[in-house]
Structure formats: structure tokens, C-alpha cells
Image (cartoon, rainbow, N blue to C red; front, side):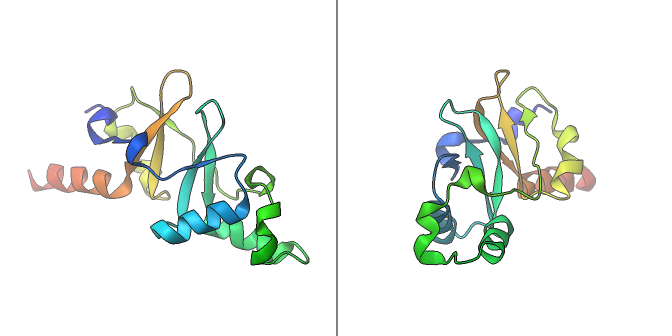
Amino acid sequence: MNVAFFLTPKTEVIYEKIDSTMRQVLERMEYHRYTAIPLIDNEGKYVGTITEGDLLWKLKNTPGLDFKNTEKVSIKDIERRFINHPVSINAEIEDLISKAITQNFIPIVDDEGIFIGIIKRSDIINYCYEKIKK
């Protein structure tokens, strides 16, 4: 089955631009209660995923950095510890199962690398559950 069937479109996904500040990302993640969100560039291409852990390690390892001055830190300057590779919209759902083991969501891109949405781990688990039930 094609992954498009499981897609949560970009319009329904919380993401951030790569030129945002650390504070903007912290506040967005807190408000929506997410532990990770996709990052896109100004052309709409997926460039990575930022996690709470990435933000925490930046805070811990940067002398003098506290919440008040996180608006001076660009997200593009924060090391991301895990690389969540995107998957093409043309992939099959079976191709995502191994990725879902370590990722809460899988970023989906079109043929030009433009971010078009995500597939949630819960949707993949539900698909597998229904297959097993049969």
C-alpha cells in the first residue's frame, strides 16, 4: 500500500523553518506538547528534525545560555543528534516499518525534496495490527 494513504499533510503538521530561533522552537514544541518537529528551509524542502534532546544538549553545552537568550540562537546552529531521513511519497508502507522503530514520525517528501507531510508511528502500528488480525 502506498504511503500517501497514511499521510498527515503539511497543513496539519507542526514544523519550523530552519532560520527560526531556539526560543521559537522551544515555545512551539511546548505549546503543542511535541518532543520532535520537522525543519524545512525557505523553499519548503525538508532539512531535518529537531528534538527536545537536541535543544537540551545545546543549552547544557553552551556556557551562559539560558532561556532568556535562546532567541539569539539559530536552529541551524544546533547539532541534531539523530538523522531522520525522509521517504518519498511513492514509497510503500512496508518500507517504513523499520524507521518507525526509532522515530515518532517519518517525514514525507515529493520528488523534488519538498516536505509534504508526515506519517505517524501510530498509523503504522495500526496498519500492522490490522494486518495481524486478519
